[in-house]
Image (cartoon, rainbow, N blue to C red; front, side, top):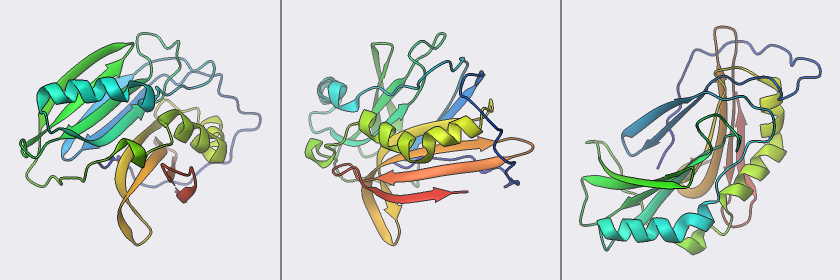
Amino acid sequence: MRAFFPAPHRRPRPPPRPGARLLGAISALLVVACFASACETEQHFFDVTGDLFVVSAADYYPQAVEKASDWRPDAYLAGISARPAPSASIGLGPSLRYYFESASAESEFYKVSLRHGTWSAETVPKGASSVTYPPINREDWTLDSVDAWAIAQANGGEEFLLNHQDPLTMMALSLSHERVGDREDVLVWRVWYRVGSATVYDALDMMIDPKTGDILQLETD
């Protein structure tokens, strides 16, 4: 699974506003997540008055596997994505998605979603250029989504959000196979932040080892 990022024209970054606090409204959060060639765009409205939360992928993993096995007995985990949000956001809260593939269903994958304690699932057709990813075993990611988010926040993410109280600020994390340096298909927790507007474009992209919690790569733009 690879995340798709919008690519607005790069613009100069203004100096951080003195004493900025994440107490203003982020009126919209746009999360774009892509698995294989299937992209989803969601727009959410909420006020950020406290911490952002991420649902534990480890806690709900057994239930997701059970639902995927009803789709295909040989289903295997190919990726996870999560959307941070305030727990008390209006109408919408943090969401979690598991992506499964199967050797017996090469033309589609299965998406199992959890939001506000409610499960949903659907098959999604793959595009012609989609890639089949290797299975992700539970022992491959001893680090939970909650832990990955905390690491990212402590290593630049929180500061990024404090400096960019913009309605177009985006953030997401995924357990996926990514390119890290000159290595291909490295399993990582990828956490990214983006902001793009008429006056500013900035980004923070972090690759975290899902076993050790080490930051394997950190890029800013």
